[in-house]
Image (tube, rainbow, N blue to C red; front, side, top):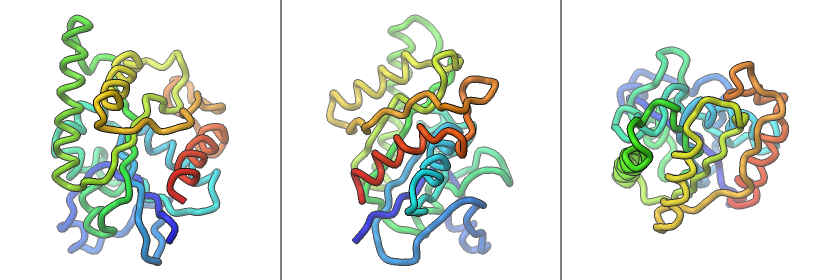
Length: 220
């Protein structure tokens, strides 16, 4: 049985299902029985999923990563139940979980905005770690699937995010046995946007190939 890959991030599950809301454009779900890898995260997580779809022949990705939701939002129920942008967001986590059942694993390319957590280094680290613990608690209310994490999200080194905190959270989660680190790392995209953070998923084949190496190599 081959694994299917789903990319989840937030939503109004039963209400959307009752209303007959389908998958967003560019999403795929196989009709055969199988398990999924759920990817949660921000806009870059979504772009990684799209780049994977260009690089892999499987077309088993359900992209539900939410564009404006970094770790601080994933620490709340909102990320699991409410799309980040009405009419533009991917299908929410809870909706896809209700539609597709339990995943084989969850993959979280961790995103933290540059000004999300403020204060001294110690204060920022405590706040970011508390947010990750909240995220994990909410995730475990929904699934016991193994969690995979990475602090590499296809952004350029000049991207204005909090790479230091992203690395701190990922390293600590792995060290404490709460998650496994995905491999290979997602490299800086070969076709970045002007903001140096986002990228063209079709032209950034290096991102797609790295995502496919992890997903197809680990779960296929």
